Image (cartoon, rainbow, N blue to C red; front, side, top):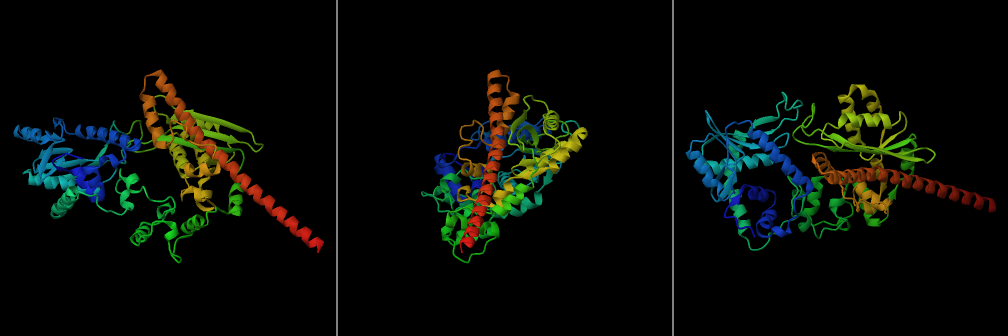
Length: 506
C-alpha cells in the first residue's frame, strides 16, 4: 500500500484517466505491470529534455531532495530570495506537486511545465492547472503558466536551432481552477475506499497513456472480443460496451459494421479463414523479380543527435534484405551501423550498392520504408534518383492481410507478429533476444555507447538476428501465398476436368 501522506499530481492525473487506476496505484501496486522498455526509454529521454530546458535559465537552483523533504527545501530557497527554481515542491489541500521550472519575472512567477512532446495536449493542460491550484493555495502568486515543448521544426540543433517552444496557457489554466476541488474530492473518495472500484474497460485504458493495470483489468477479456475488430470506431465500441457486449458472439444480428469489420466478425463466428484467392493472385502478379524483401530499423529521439536532424525524425541505423530470384535462388544482404556517428550516409550507400535497379521492393507496412527512403533521398542528392526509384518500387505485403486473407488466428490484426505464427508456425521471434522495434532502438543505443567488446558483439548479433527475422518472415509468407494461389488453381483445374469427364460420360 502507498503510504504517501499526500495526493500527488501524478495520482490526480491517474484518477482523471481512471479511478480504478488510482486505487490500484495506491492500494495494490503489485497488480500493475512494470514500466515497458519503451516507457523507460521515454522517461530517460524526458529527463534529458528537462535538463536542456533548465539550461535556458542560468543560475537556477535545483531542489534535489526526496519528495517528503522537498517542500521545506523549497521554502528555504524562497526565503533566500531565489528567483528560479527547478523541481520545487508545494503542498496545499493535501496535494503535493513538483514543478519543472518556476522563475520570477517582472509580472510575477512564471510556472513552466516541460514536455518532450512536439505540442501540448489536454492532459498537459490538466497537469499545469493542478500545479497552479496548489501554488496559488500555498501563497505563491503565479502570473503566467506555460508548457515548454519540443519544436518539431528545429533542424540545426545545437548550432543555431531553437529546440523549445513556449506555449502560454494561462487563460486555459485559470478557466479550470473551479473544477479542481471536485477532482481532489473524487480522488480522495477513491483513495479511501476499502474495495477496488468497479470500472468498465474501454479506450481510457490506452488514452491518454497506456495504463499499467491493463493486463490485470483485461484478464478476463477473450481473444475474440470487440477490441479485436480491426479499425472499429471508438464511438461504436463504447456503444457496444455500454450494452454489455464484449465478446464477438454477443453481437446481435443486424448490427451494422464496415466491410473489413464484418469480415473479421464472420471469420470469428465461422472459425474459418477468409481467403480471396483471386485478389491475392492479382496482387502477386504485379510483382517483378527479383524480389527484395526489405526492412529498416530506425531510432527516433526528441533531441537531435546528428546534423540536419529534426526532433523525432526516424534515423535508420540498420536494414535487412532477403532477395528472391525468379529461378528460386535466395540471397541476403544487410547493414548495421555500429559507431556513434550518423548512420544515414553509409546506410544509403549500402542500399544503392546492394540492391539492383529492377525488381519489386517488398515491405510490410510499406509506408514506413517509403518514408525512410524518401528522407534519405532528400538528405543525399547524389543518391536521390536511386533511392526515389526504390521507393517507387515498393510493394506492401501487409495489404493482403488487411483485405484478402483474414484468419481467426490473426486476432483482428494484420501485424506480421500475428500473421507469421499462423502461416509459418516453425518461424518465430520467441528465441530472439530482441523481438520488437522498441527493443531494437534501445539495443542500438546501448551498442553505440558501449566500450565493452563482448557486450558490443552480443548486441550486434542480437540486432542482426532480429532484422534478419523480419525479412525472412516476409519471404516465407510470400512462399505460403504463392502456394495458396497455386493450390487453388490446381483445384479449379481438377474441378474443371471433372466436369468435362462427367459431360463426356453423359
